[in-house]
Image (cartoon, rainbow, N blue to C red; front, side, top):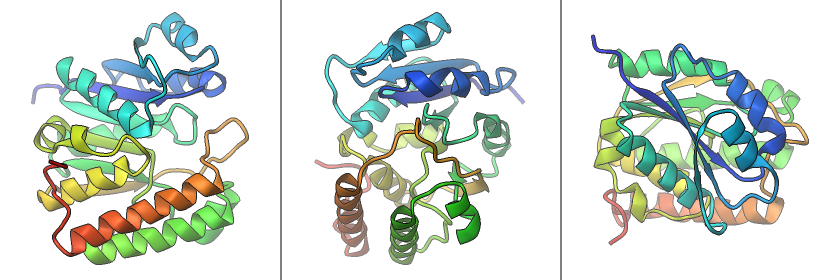
Length: 242
């Protein structure tokens, strides 16, 4: 079987403090290219990424988390990636787990892989996830599973892997430029019948890791519920907004 080209994309914003450690742990025997898209950081993220030899693209202004991923996937596909791994560069997720992600996709077990931070309440909270985030994560995931017919342990992870054909077949460009982008992508994938797999990943919250505040979390939660309700009543266009 021909070895797939594996590209890791890092949607970055002020990731200087954690970028080096994240990149260091990426398994280079599996990964062929690392692309960093910088969403107009105010620190030395771009310089550090270039010094490490990453492929770097810049947004001329801050455009949002969803917009960052759109640029990531566009350049990964243009570069010939067969498997695209989206990894937050804040070191909340263990890059070494990229290896099993690629194995499951390359061997046709699944079309999409998610890294789930939720195995037990005790473990998740011990890893530093704030209680209000844990409660909202559980509630939103339960509701999203209910309306979609899935049984995923977490819908809100920042470590995901996609086969090329998945990204080519969904209109991710028409999705939100904000955090709810991730939710829209999953509903698009489910709507088109792709197989989603999961593996557990350690929970790592620490001061240098990025975290949206309570207000932005509340907005994200309400937008997530709205997308789920639209899907439930057949009003969510799986091909993207028109």
